[in-house]
Length: 150
Image 1 (cartoon, rainbow, N blue to C red):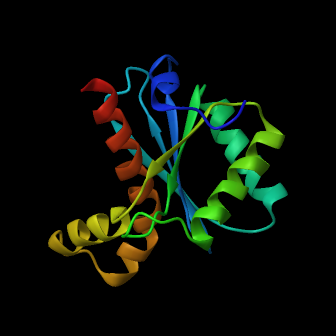
Image 2: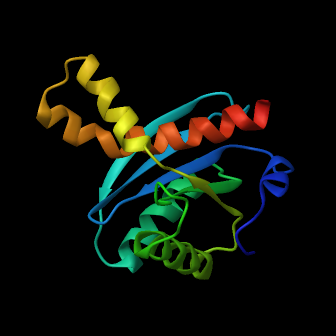
């Protein structure tokens, strides 16, 4: 199954997995079955894709995930650069492991928004570093959940 449209995503049922792919780590978040709340689950330090892919499949299987939401890093001017292509390659590799619907969501400013919230919450630099990726994944996923309900 290729990357799907928003309308196709809206026709799926069940929990969603949100992924915030970074260059060194990626954050994972999962929605509840009713698709109301996104919860940051874990941050995974990137290794070889074969290892990373198995960790993602374990999260998919363990939570009965029906579709995957992947943050797409679009440039502020709306163009797609090398990071966006890297995310598309990541999705293509994931589809080779499992035929699961994947929806790409514009993730501009998600990490900045999460970091600002953590700063307002007075989290230490170490605690922010531990949490930012999984919370960015939750932020991305929550944006999709909110749009699905709109």
